Image (cartoon, rainbow, N blue to C red; front, side):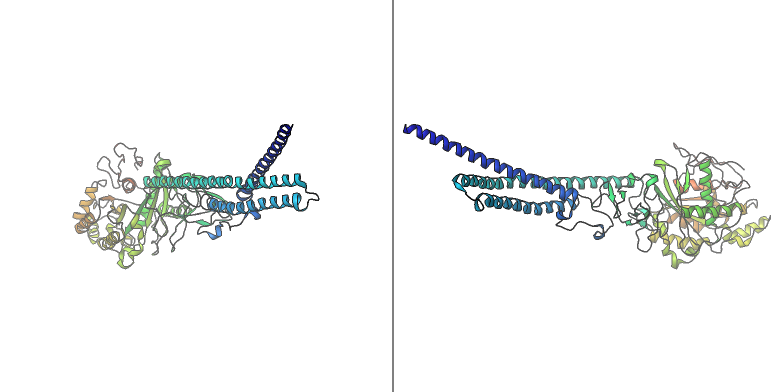
Amino acid sequence: MGEAWVVILASVLGIFVAIGACTIVVRALGLVGELLWRYGRLLVGVMVRRTAEHQTIPPYRPEDEPVPAYRNYLFGPAVRDLHQIVNLGAAMWGRSVGDRFRTLAQERLTQAREPGALKIAQALALLAGLALGAVLSLPLLLLLLGLHALLVLLLHLAARLLAAVLRGLDRAVLRLKGLDRGVLCPHCYERVPYPSYACPRAECRRRHGDIRPGRYGVVRRRCACGARMPTLLILMRRRNRLAAFCTHAHCGKPLNRDAGHARETAVPLVGGRAAGKTQLMAAMLMTLESAAGSGGPELRLADEDSVAGYRVLREVLAMRGHTRATQRNLARAHSAILGQGRTEQLVHLFDAAGEHFAKGEDTDALRYVRAARTVVFVLDPLAVDVTWELLDAAGGPAVDRTLASTDRPDTVFANASQTVARLGERGTRPRLAVAVSKTDLLAGHGVLPERLDDSAAARAWLTEGLGLGNLVQAMELEFREVRYFFTAAVTDEDGAVDPSLVPFVAWCLHGTATGPHRPVRPGNTTTLRPPGRRPLLPRPRRR
């Protein structure tokens, strides 16, 4: 009989112990579940809703950044959110556990009317469950925080790697286009390593110094106004290209829309006052325009200033007039896009006032020679006394002496070559295209050689006919390659530019001016067909 009571008591005690253990486990799991749920709400509040109660650290604001843009989430804000989650999570854990202990103690112990042994045991089991749940929740929450931190780190490293790859791709594309040293500003003539870009939103127009992938965006950047902008030039289609600006403090003017998207070619025209540089530049553009209309590479002027300037120059040439002298200050380059697609190139034609070359003290302003691979020297034969002697001896119609340049070619070249040597890039020597101008005024007087499409014939005429041997020798010593051309910057009755410009323009832009040598009438007419390539310019029509 005694043994039976022992078994009964043991069974009852076991039941109570089992109930108590279950109570402890259930309460512990309940607290763990509650804490995890609260942690999830905390994540949503910090990372998604971003309400005021979830902001314990000041956010990254565009006005506090060196550029007016929001930081990419993985480059700062993600770590800030993690820091806030740690702070708010610790406070949440302490507050939740403390509230549950206080509530249980008040309801089950201190405020109970008749606690009784059973209720006290139940309260103790619940307290034990809360303690167990608090202990179990800590490693789980720390594990989640650790995984969160690891994910942030991995994503940050991945974003950095992707940004580095994209920047490398951007540099590779620029290198293929010959723009790895930067783009050329048509206003100040300085190289711009990387332009600043304006926000595409018309009411904003904030300028961003460097939009390449990085801290403020990997593929897209968000301006302070909220507008999205691409971070790579290769992501900018022609219809949504951002407006680019020079970054030099003394300039800051807008660049061409195609800057950075097309290979650049800078062709400065140097020469004395009234040597014919401006007319020659207009005739070069007209030659390219005529070629585009005859099946050659497409041509379009790159900006409104070039369009306006070219319109005026074309009208002057059409009237067979003479352009006014170029202003002494640095004039803006005339820029045009030649070709399309992968063959596009942005051509800058620079025409500086002759005073810059007639006087050596102000040639420091001619910074565009740093970007030039081909320099055009406009040689006015009327500025040489021997030419007038030949004209007087040959007879024929009188030539207006007021059309001659007032600067001797050798003096102008000496100053220009010193500028090129001083300001040019170290280790590089540009080519020189010598454009003998105003040959239309000399045609019919018998002073020009029979062949006007041959560089050697032009060289011989300059050295032997005009006595400029020392000048020719200096040219060939100072420049990597020299080619001589007879040019006439005039148009005929139909508005067609003189065909002498065709081989000259082709050689200046591409170094190809080969063609069959044959006697021609005054004015160069030659077919441009580089070996194995499509001709740069179509065959000029005979007049």
